[in-house]
Image (cartoon, rainbow, N blue to C red; front, top):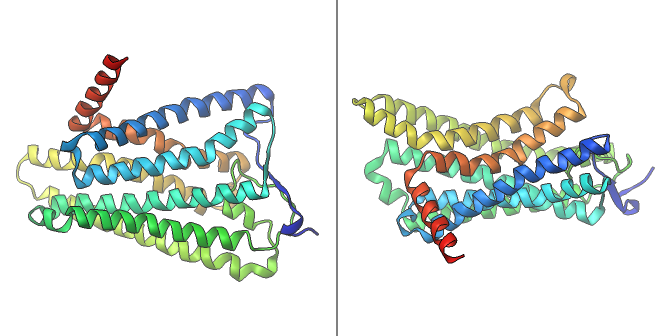
Length: 310
């Protein structure tokens, strides 16, 4: 029997068994992460530089892009390193250093998606009160609350996880350090302590989920009452990018953590983790830029100016 004090490293799940597939996975992760970094970086630059984009929707989109950049930079580089160099180890402190930002950025992303849902709700259901409810001060307070709550959530989960004694080896069944897989290595005597924070976090996420569902029910009811077809289409088009991003994030996360144990397997867990960690940051710039003419116009200006300067 070993405990956490004697563990110097963890063994991560390899993305593939053969060298050829490992290199293929490295190329796939590189091909996904580079456009994600570039796309989210362009969104941040466009919103920061385009004064006509200084609105609540784009302010929250900028914060969402920051959380996506953090998610990509936290988990993907280590997975790419392990695939390229045919290794699967991560140090104990390195694992803790990966868990904290992972939980932090995922929590911030969910909070920001919830706030963006509120923005759409006020815009469509209470347009006359939009300037009052979503003024610059209110937006700054909501964004600060999202980041602060994510920080506290990540701090509590990381401190709780790495203060537990580990009695079941050091092999993690995931390609990055994930709290549920670390808890599987801990001693059974700490069951209540292990489950307590997970239940609390689950309740918070469930509250955000209920708020998003309730808000969209009200949004759809309001849109269907709009008499003109053009007005309904315009209202729906402002919601579709957010609805697409939040649907992918929530559905993949729910299936990853709440799927029946009978269908669980390392390959399925790995695929689902990539789906909710890597794919949303890559799709976010594409979804928002394709359906927003203002954002596309600003991005074109930025790229034109940068090419001319070169």
